[in-house]
Amino acid sequence: MKLAKRAMMLLSIVVLVGMICVGSYAQEVSIPEEVAESAGELALTYIDSAATYLGQGIVYILNLITGDRVSTDLEKPVGYLALITGLLLVFGVIEFARKIIWIGIIVGWALLIIRIVLDALRV
Image 1 (cartoon, rainbow, N blue to C red):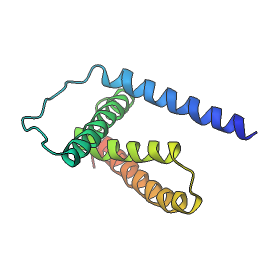
Image 2: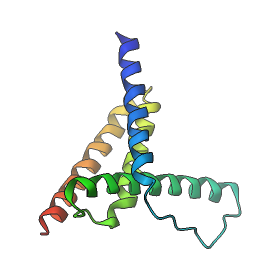
Image 3: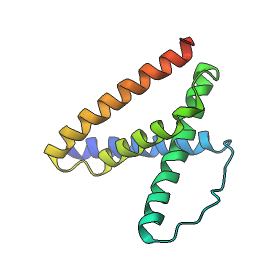
């Protein structure tokens, strides 16, 4: 049973990453002007780039569904929430930390869904 759950989680992660890759394939790419100098800056730049690409892919898919009603201002928040959600799914080993992180994830997604609905209704 535990093996089936892990296989299903791995399959869902692969499908999610595949959908995001296909969705972000049509996105325009902007190259930053400044160059990171230290290892810390490189790591933060990598995380920011990953979150940006994830957000662009998810917003692209949401715009396909809603007919371009989701604002592109949501790319970074959606990307960071998707990145944190993915990390939670991959590294969800410690039970106590998972509960605390899940609270933040649920609040974040709820606020994001409210923003998307408000954008879609043009309120």
